[in-house]
Length: 352
Image (tube, rainbow, N blue to C red):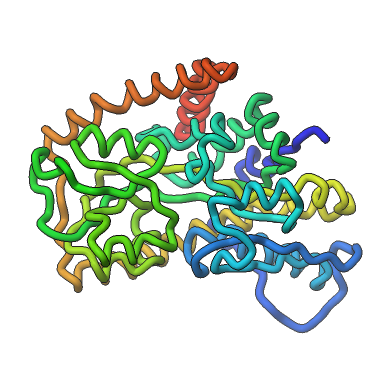
């Protein structure tokens, strides 16, 4: 089956961020979209949080429009699969849908890691989803997902990353040397450029790793991801508007399960995506306001960007991009073409 990226409504920019009426539970009524009773199991990890509000919005929309006939059963806490194995679970049909983050297993989705490069020019969540949709349509990326019997449905948006840590705040470049920092994708290269030692640990294990002293700091989406795992409880400092870029995760469906859906349900998924993105963006805005107040009350020290640190980061970014291009070329993928697509799509999305 040829992979279909479900992004047509996105390209139209129909987010309707203001005045959007999100689905809510209510009395049963005639379905707007008729069809059979279908329930998909969705593999997620952690608890409900800003990261998962997109799939929550998608599930609510599908249920509302079908009067409960098309249900997404959201299974949190990694009860269906470890987050590092969701792509494997999709491939064998262990569940119908899952969130997949390429940085957890870059060897399985190497081309998709292009969206994880540090400090890509994607300043807003809106510019992210437009750029991601363009990239997922590229034939090389489409073939990669099809190789895992997976169909990307929508991206899971994450804000730009900051660093939160425990101990003495790193006031200058030298203070970063030797810090043990959890970082993934291109952010690992940035941390290494500062002299830190980077590692990638699954999200559910971050709190215990920091608590027992195995980690000094964590590079994560600001602000929601830190509080989703209660990392602010252990931390004493956080970087202030460093905007290190973000990474891409994808809500994907098993190819056979998607192919078996009646056409009206496939169309409904397309229709639901703008509302799902809108719910996620609104959730981030709400939680940011609450979290900023909490960080202030806890007395977290804000670490500003110094010129010395900025120079080190900028010196690391372009070489890390070029290293990725060369890696893709060695795998038989058009590395420079893919990077150019990301950058041109980001420029167009930011200009909209």
